[in-house]
Image (cartoon, helix red, strand yellow):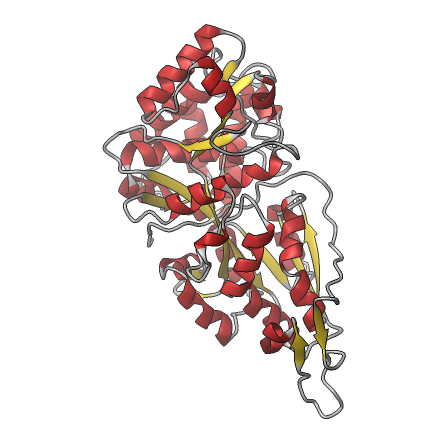
Length: 459
């Protein structure tokens, strides 16, 4: 399995708010010389003014494509803003639907003959399963050509058995710890640079009283448990490096292997330490019933000090929260458990997967794989990063996005894609979630947790 020092995004991690299709009228900025549909002669209309840049996608006015994903509000709001001008100018309506039950419902819809035109799939394992259903349509030539804007390994992530099916859409940085710079400064705490320093700081905070060092939540609808997979992945990568991580992803190294058992014990000493968690919510078991969206809130009320979560968690902070090195909230890179592992970075990614090859669907597919769309998304988003090399890095005005982009493009980093997303869905998007949830909710023994996950691996 090819790996690289570049990013990818596990985007099932979203808000529970009800999504809605965003209606934005941009007619003042864009105009067409015709209605945008092909005339009786079949000629493609000429787009003018601010719409001229979408000429390559013209000729499909009055059509609609459907898109299904796990991205919910508030992040879905910026997603829909990112293509609003394209939609207005081309006349192609993109009907978006987000669901917290995406992973399970996509399979139901595809096998039931009710597939969307597009699905934004965050797990290569799920992509492989969809391809095996025979319903996924290969991308058009322009989408394939747009892959030149990405590190070549991204094409591998969007491929199944050597055939390219899904263009990468976005990237995120998983290896972050959220904290309050203001609170740290007032207490005299320094951002830890090593795992030993992080553990020592956690112990110091716990003994000081007035708030637990860590808060956490793994609740996420039918995807409950996924944040715990990230904690384990961070420890495996940061303890043993990329080779063991890769062998674990392919099940050459099993969950019951002494290395993974040791990593689980490290996680337990960190996120299942009753003296350290779960600030603002309760005991260790409360982590299983706290949604990941709510998990960081106690940092703002000094009930907890730190939260390990990805860059996209930025969308969960309340409006008006000052985010930056001197603000209410910021983030630092999670250090390696083993100092010998150079700059471990875990990331995740989303892939635009088509179930139709209608002309308007292919037009949207081409646009969403372009650097123009990625730049549009950067302009309307925070907590969102693209690995498309055509995006001008000066567009990142948010300090967390800049931090993430630097880490994800660091050639010296030990980067790996989210392990559970790479594993077969029966494991990474099912049994591992369930077993790790039981681990937190019921205190199930580590050997039992590992054995149950190994048993779920497809033969």
